[in-house]
Amino acid sequence: MTTNRIVDWLLDSPVSQFINSESWAWPCLEITHFFSLCVLFGSLAVIDLRLAGFGPPVSDRVGGILVRAAFLAFGINALTGALFFTANAPKYIDNPAFELKLVLIGLAGLNALLYHWRFRPLLAEERTTQIACLSGVASILLWSGVIVCGRMITFFAR
Image 1 (spheres, rainbow, N blue to C red):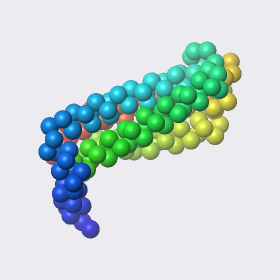
Image 2: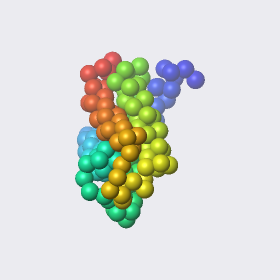
Image 3: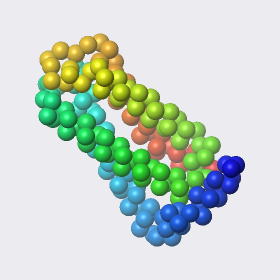
Image 4: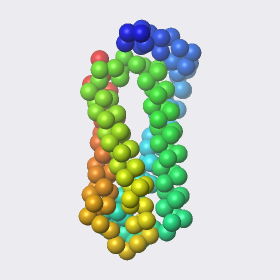
């Protein structure tokens, strides 16, 4: 299936038709996307700043809550983002801001795996390591880049 056929198929889908025909649907998706992004970034900021050596140790219980909140918020963002794409695929296809956003999300995901495998125990400790600090700072920068690219999508849309 060619890109144009996929775009046409998406635009003709019932989901796209619903989002585009109901005046409240897109704004509700935007609000949900933004709110869950705030939860995601806020949860990760606590974890990442701790890894970077700022703030007191975070208990395993609180760290677990933060990680679950981040995963839930990411899932909501992925769902609402997929709905945005479905409803207006031409805005996103060949859009450099959207493409960079996806790359940054992928890199942030790899960084999150590194956190999960190596650095999670450091949350509850007084110490941190240089590589954990670098991972925390990288996460903040990557997610900040995701936010900036998300805002820039409109300016690069065809």
